[in-house]
Image (cartoon, rainbow, N blue to C red):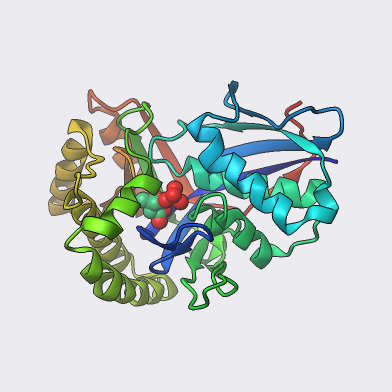
Length: 337
Ligand code: PMV
């Protein structure tokens, strides 16, 4: 009962920021993302009677019951798996080993890639027989954005209306081949773990940000329509302008939260200004930022090397990674233990 899976991170073009049900991980709004080739999580799970307790090792570090990272994330996810599939799991404990090829917990969607890989590996190891839609719903229970990393290319996560979450899942809008020239150049401005996890930040925003209602009822529904059309028509300018505006508005909501949720550092600000200047010079690029200080620069393949070169010149940038529309989750024979 051992299986391994690899999943890519995804970067939202229309962000998810806020839950309507914490237990079922149901979002306040829909969202749209691009699954990115190159930022990946590789996870192996083994359910076996030889384990006395669940074991979790991420990036070589062991987490146990009582650690916040374990209890609120993987521990919670395993509880869902055990409740939903008691006949398959029985009283078996599980060992989970997961590695990312990029910094964890620093606003690079590590939890999205990690939980998509974990859900797929669990599905395979326990022979649950879930299809991609059901898998996206299972991954959602680990981390909301993980629901989108199940699929390749351009993905929409449907908010759904039902209280039980049965219509809340992700679906592919277009495969990677639809727009293979699109690039996200990721500028890592800090590899440190972020101080405020997305989960805590968005909860506070829903509760206290005076801009939350306008974000939920006006901004996101409008941006979802515009981004879907821009993707269908491969209109880069509209896509970039809208994705950038959406990120800024999400951060405006977060910054106006009490206590404030501010993810940007000095490096983040430097790149924001640089991208705007480059655009004025005629270089077509736009930025997006998630729950961390990293900046992702949206551009086309023809400009991606030049943008990466310029980003590498910044003193306070630790790493630059070029990503393109990528594949969905997949099972692999390569086990990590
Ligand atoms: O799924 P979480 O809890 O990691 O939240 C993700 C939130 C953002 O990355 C900021 C936005 C998004 O849609 O990915």
